[in-house]
Image 1 (cartoon, rainbow, N blue to C red):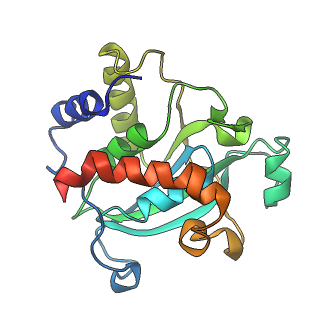
Image 2: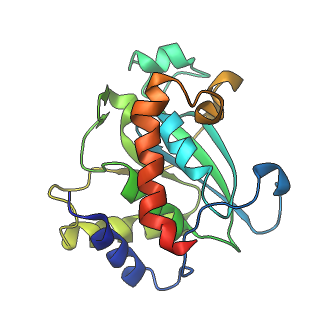
Length: 212
């Protein structure tokens, strides 16, 4: 994978309609009201949902993030069933964001920076179909934006391999149990949090700090 600024530069050039910055959230999540007219939602899979959730909870303009599952064939699956890789579900984070403060383009800039979109059914040591790279869109506009970004990243050879991120419509989102929500915030000293999630947070803060 090439250096992060190349990816960011491409996204900033190709998405002229987006806002000029992606920034770390400065207000607590409780201070932001849900259900505002400007709110939009997108659902992303980029490996373990704890990792994706932890990063987006730091992003300015994000109203709420929920860990859960989508894309499978079993109704209301449990975490244990999804981990077996037999339900067809993807571990995802469903992100509600204020479209007056950030955009789908900004959300996807972060997405393509903090995970590897070129590995099939794998992120690091997390292996299985539940860890596939995926964008589950909530509108045709989101689909078009995602496809455009992927095409331009591939054409520019921003990565050493082709992007394999699935782009599909959201079907049913199953929210994970409460002990899986805000996992990093509640378990930051856990070994997995320190070894896997913390480096992703540090990458996010390093790459996007100039947009604070």
